[in-house]
Image 1 (cartoon, rainbow, N blue to C red):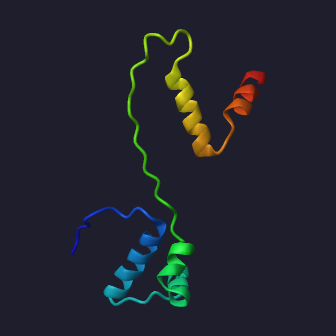
Image 2 (image 1 turned 90 degrees about the vertical axis):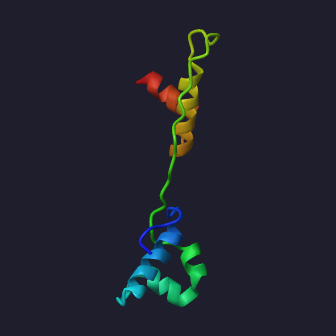
Image 3 (image 1 turned 135 degrees about the vertical axis):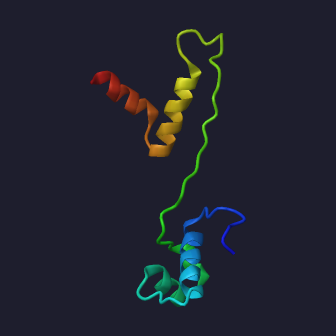
Length: 101
């Protein structure tokens, strides 16, 4: 089967699928880290300690500027908070640092 029903979303699934493809093609997994973890701990080893990088997917939804917002656009605040969350930073300290520069 060449196509997939759904995309690979988890790092452990990516490791498992890579090992599966190699084995089904008659190849050797050799000293792959994922293969050693699978041999030692089974599927739980891949789930607990995946070697693949996670694939983060996101989507952007546009929003109109509310007419009642005055000088401060709430979309900009939401964007700052979202980036702060993704980068694991505090929005207040970053804003103060930017103002002081």
